[in-house]
Image (cartoon, rainbow, N blue to C red):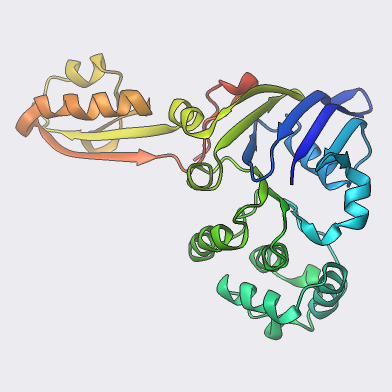
Length: 297
């Protein structure tokens, strides 16, 4: 499903959450929306999903988005970053959504089971009484099982355990093949495998729009840690940007290009190098303007 935004604006009081966004996402595009907190990512996803009013136009497959949402609701799916606090039992939530979207409840249960959630065991519990991970698994199962043509995922794996996160990566390739995917995430594993394009926002504006692999390569961060023989001249690591850590270790944060060059240079230490550890941050370095250095690990 093609998604087009034309001068989309959203204002909260004096704050311009979106300040005239233009985007054209062709059918089948897989796009990550990234940016620091307050950049407008979640607002933009909620505009596309039809959850907030806005100025400007949003079109889906060339038609006004509100018309498509009314007539082709089964083709759309949205997984919010924060699950709604629904008092209804899980069984009622499941019945309502599957009826609206024309899905078989059993199929949703199968996908949920793949993620590690037994719907039968929690069917009588209020949705809001589930753990964060359980809520997210159910919402993802509801989104995936319908095989939507447009799916919006706002930090979809934030509450998942590692096993469920890995299984989701497999399931989305199966259930979302050919779909247009809009993903809000800074997780490197998701940016590397789920999307081919990155749109970076800052202060409600698009500040970068390009290939995902190039953006990840220039913004991914690592830490190189080395343990040296105590007799090693400390000028060697100091001159190369390392700072001393505990128990004789030295550490230095590096980007991708510097990491490869630095690891190669370590070979010159020979026997003086007792150990080396390279730790990749699991989340992208993000800052204002799409090129900052705020790192979350």
